Image (cartoon, rainbow, N blue to C red; front, side):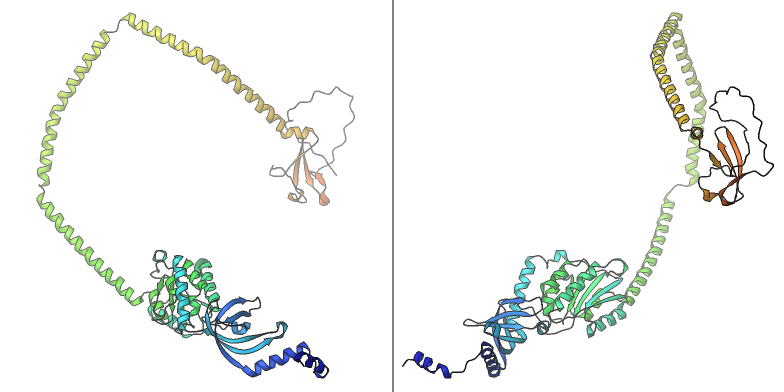
Length: 492
């Protein structure tokens, strides 16, 4: 009987498992059998989920195991996992029942050795160098005496205390610390954000120089300063940057991108500022040397002036020659003037002799003809100019007449003037008891402001109404304003 037939015959006695029971049994068997393991493999298909979990595959030349590193452990990694990197992972084997796969839950991950890290470092160094980030031509000079110093480092380590202590000893300056973590997966983003943040600052708080510092450690501990984000931020900084990462023998990629590399954080503080006592001594010494040189120069110039003065002739000799020359020219001047006057007189007589009455008459006639021609040309221009000016004057007069406020009074409006003679345009400008003058087209009336907004004429007896008169022909209206018409009345 075959195995298949035997299984069919005994099928009624075999226990039936659910899929979940089988998956759970396999999960327990794998976890109990292997427990905590260490696996050396090559990373492949590295992917970081939005939740922060890290998913990847561990492989060698014959097999592949899925791996996962939960967010909390992934943030503690000292380097950024990448495809092709050989690593040593520590964790436990388990299964993933939803896909009937087994996988490794990684608690710790580290490069397979310094050789692998150095190979990755060298490859990254060549890539960034090819982009020109390490060129010496783009380095910025460090200011001699910065007013503000920005420091990017951990606020709790010994590094910041060493920097502050050294600055206080040499030349106290204002220090702004941007606290960051200097180790772990999140360190690179924090450090690059701090460098960019300092560069975005404005005003008096903007540092004149930056110091990026960290204490010594292994290659893994310093790996954050080899990340591209940190190197690119250092290379793009508009503020001069001093790198002080690790000890003198430690080298990271940020050292190549920075404007100046210090062997230690303390050395960075020494490079950032001079020694105040040495600077004061140098200034005082230069002052003394300047005073000595000035005194020596004055003495030398005085001696040279005295020597030159001895080589000059005496003032009496110089003035004597000039006086003799002056006397000689004074004697010759009257004779020269007489000769010139005689020559000019002779020339004038010759010219007068050459002018005849006919020639004079001809010249006068020519000048008259010329003047008449000029007058004939000017007369039309003068008339046109006079006509244009007359038209402009008439137009301006008509416009002035149309814009006169008297035309407004003719349409039934009145002009209220205050005690100071200025027009009143708002009721809020008047108070009870104020006297105003209201101007109409045919005269003006003095009035008094009453309570409640009424206007009363100046106090005095009321004017009696005039008796009616026989109708008379009305005279034509005059457009001129009546003069001296100051009638008074009561308006309620």
